[in-house]
Amino acid sequence: MVALVAVENLVKHFPVKRSLADVVAGRHPVVHAVDNVSFTLDENETVGLLGESGCGKTSTGRLLLKLDQPTSGRIEIAGKDLATLAGADLKAFRRTAQLVFQNPFDALNPRFNIRRVLAEPMINAGIDRREYADRINAELARVRMQGVGDLLDKFPHQLSGGQLQRIVLARALILGPKFIVADEPVSMLDVSVRAGVLNLMREIQETLGLTAIYISHDLALVRYVAARTFVMYLATVVEDGPTEQVISSPQHPYTKALLAAVPVPHVNQNREPLPIKGNMPNARNPPSGCRFHDRCPMAIARCAAEVPALREIEPGHRAACHLA
Image (cartoon, rainbow, N blue to C red; front, side, top):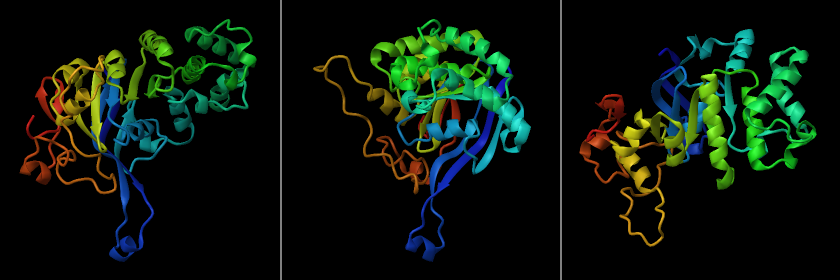
């Protein structure tokens, strides 16, 4: 397979307001959103980006779509360095990489009817207006929304959440992208419609041969859609590998804690206390060494002093833990 996406030593820090003490000490505080993240994605590959809120999942996705600029590091998509893209080249890139938003109720302009919502990407990309109707009809058919009455004349508030998410998906696909980032794509939907939307997304991806990243905190979703999973904690990747290996044989204590936190089906079923303590540290001042060491029940002195390398534990399965 050919690598479509290549990320090397990616860093994103967001500057924050300086206090008087920061000014006096000459400090420039930042929030560590992404720190030294590297990976590659093959064509037609589906990966999951897993972790709790604030770990850097969404920031990583935004960097891959050039919605934010990295502090340092390199991103290549289809052999092109994103840092060098501008003008016509950047406009062409926007057609090949698209985002599926988390909240369909906020992702669509409430003043646009569905026809205009779906036409907007084509207007921005400079597509010939004579192609609009055919493209819109084709994508509505792809997301199983063709023939829904006077759909194109309706406004977002007149559709259900499941219908809106299908429209969001159609809008993302209408320019024919090769790469999509789906940020919590079904978290805002009723449980009864989630499976239908996920099945649709899997079918479309396989049909079109898309490379996709699913950002989620939901282990079940990632297990269902992704062949490979990256687990993030406090801006860093702590484990990655084939999804089934990561879930059935986790190597990092944080991954084990995520699995232990999955709800059990019976309210009276006994379960062990979570193998984790405290809350995620402040991203402005992450811990030294392993960023998980102050919450880890297995931590040793080395964990606080030395940053663990993301090393291969078994073929294709890596973990950033001194004890793995």
